Image (cartoon, rainbow, N blue to C red; front, top):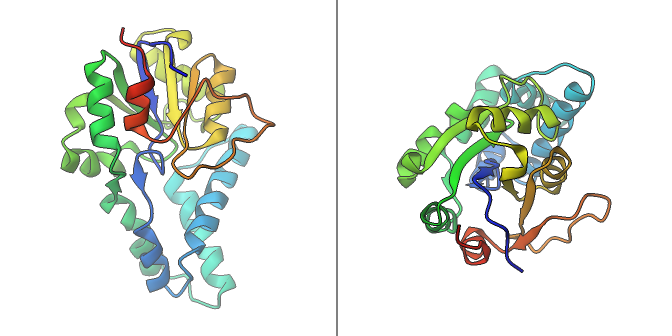
Amino acid sequence: MSANHPDVLVLDVNETLSDLTPLRQRFEDAGLPGHSLDTWFAATLRDGFALTVGGATAEFGAIGADVLAAQLSAAGIEPTEQTIRSVLSGFTQLSLHPDVVPGLRRLHDLGLRIVTLTNGSATLSEQMFADAGLLHLLEHRLDVTTPARWKPHQAAYEYAAEVCGTGLDRMALAAVHPWDIDGAKRAGLQGWYIDRRRTPYPKTFLAPDLVVADFEDLADQVRPA
């Protein structure tokens, strides 16, 4: 299966590009089990989605701090500002998955304009992209501050299209999160599922236009412009 060539490739950041695994050690250093990272991330997304549905918004970091404070308290650990900062500051020190750099370089060479769109803060990932030598490949690094609606709300994808000056039907979103793929497709984009973990795609969501193992596989599947 190969993908039709859009003008713009929109990339999710957390987990799709960045490897969150090193954060497990920070949770353990705070006194929590390493797998608390997964619960924390899911709960942070849940609360961000809930605010969006209710017509409100809050920053990823603020929501994440509240969720972490609740986890620490439930474990009988004092949720001090220092402990919370020590855990969450790890987001500024993450690295990319190994397939990202070669994959994105090949996708760029195929003529795709590449942008990132995250529910987190775009500034948190700047060092990660700089260290990987990818900043020059990213036309825009966007977050949901301006639309004030988290993905998968349509407003987030419309914002990316407006910044890029192109139609939603000329864009594709690549992500490891089915909810992001579903939201993008409902907004009018192609949805490309990065399935590193070989996880069955939920049947309740709109099916992706393309399923690939990683970004190198994606570059193999995209038709030249």
